[in-house]
Image (cartoon, rainbow, N blue to C red; front, top):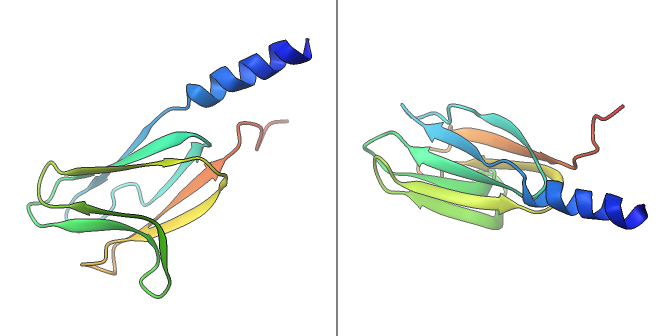
Length: 110
């Protein structure tokens, strides 16, 4: 029975949904997203101008990820394998900020 539960847990982790965040008019359109561990978040640039998706804050950068979105249609993706809260920002436009909250599948369960 324990092995069966473990197998189910692995299937759930592998089947984690992916999330998209649109960048449009100098804003992350979903500035705060919550995803399960193992999910990939993909940022899609809807602006003609370039942006970045940089981990941390302008005051305290984090080397976890730093992607470029060089114009309309450009994408950047990062897979989140550990639970936690991950702030991010655009290095070219530091007022643009967002946050990814990564939760285990059991958080919030009764």
